[in-house]
Image 1 (cartoon, rainbow, N blue to C red):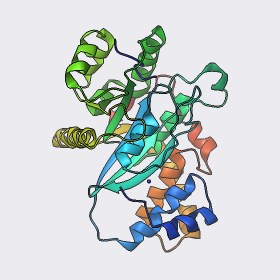
Image 2: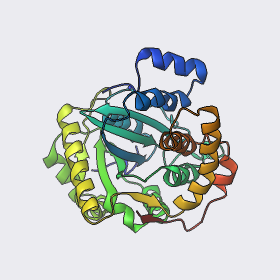
Image 3: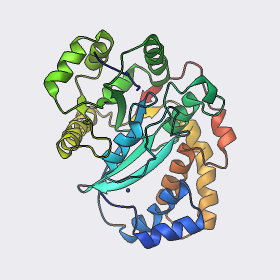
Length: 307
């Protein structure tokens, strides 16, 4: 019996002193991004490989928990409850094992009807996709192994296909939560769930179990995730298609250039590339001063292209 098909701070960006300074300056989610500036400026010549990831899944699947594990530090709020903890797209970044991970967490794609006036999940995911540069190395689809697949899961999969496009499967990794690290058991569960089996084939058999521990992802599971992700990136890069990118990326970029110019006026010591990285990350989580213009970039039959 497979379940909940999408359902149900490693190293801080700077030290504690920089963290408290950021909180005094702005606090909240933007503090994570503000901590990034002194780190980059302090080590301009350090070459660090990056992994850019977006997490997608149903309410309660364990997206935030998975994101914290990938980062190796607690940056996303994660708890057991009946409502979506992640209300808007959130962003976290950290260096783990010499690689910088940039992870975007999204609200549950099946958020309850009574929260839909507050959470427009499709808008949140789409904005995150077209504001992030240069795109995503991986789309991590988080599945829980504790509940049966329902009719709403079929509708959700169809909606994701429309929103992300068929090309998304070339970048997708299935992460299975709430299951002991037992590959044989997972194989049995997939075999008994045709929908998951079809999804598994589309993802070219890329799957990783993240265990049952609610507090920590086993090191061996993270190691396998890193291996699967590295192989995926090498494969897509080989064909000149390293990043998954939204088809409205260029339109969003023109708007975000204005954000960058404004930021540079306030922070002239920051390079253009650093400023652009910061405003893109801010925009991806809904903090652009030109949010209303970004939200006008939409298409009911939204799909994405390969970069």
